Each structure stands twice: as C-alpha cells, then as structure tokens.
Image (cartoon, rainbow, N blue to C red):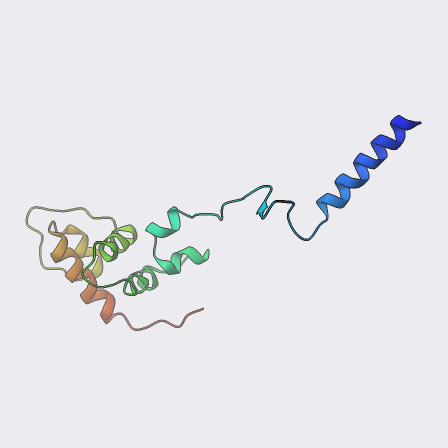
Length: 125
C-alpha cells in the first residue's frame, strides 16, 4: 500500500510540476535554460530576414541600410543576401546583382548602397 501511495505522490507532483506557469527555479535561475532559436545565425543575416517569413531580395537589401554606412557589418549583410563572386575586371554594374563581381570591398559596398537606396521603400508587413 505504501508503494502505491509513493508512486501516486510522485506522479501527481510531476504532473503538477509540468503544468506550472513558471519554469522550475533553482535560486534565482531557471532549472533548465533554453537558448532562443538562431542566436548566432541571426546576427549574420539582415534584421528583416530574422522574422521568419521569406522576404524579397529588395527588402533584405533595404534592411542592410539600417546598419551604419561604411562598416564591415553592412557589407557582410549585403554579402549574406548576394554572395560575392569577384572578377578581375568587372563591367559597370547595371543592377544590384552585378555588385557581387567587384573585388574591392569599398567598391562593392558603394555599389550595393547605390542600388539599395534607389529601391522604392516597401511597406512593412
């Protein structure tokens, strides 16, 4: 009889423990810590892409404009949208996709900035 009561007490407390609103605490810290999804990956991607919805290239390029100009972070953001494929003597860029062919980072950044700033602002959804 004692064994049945002990098993019932353990099962009851486990079910009550699982239904609690707050996670179980040890001192002032949760017993189990879960990292948010994409903590490191989200930093490398544009801010708009981290929301979960697939976004157009134009809106991802515009999201890169929120990063300070002239920084390596903004170029990394552009390169995440359109990976670089440098050529020794690239032709003049006719579109944002042609910017990836510039070997020099400053030229590539200026090219992307020019096209990203000329894209009409899209409404945020």
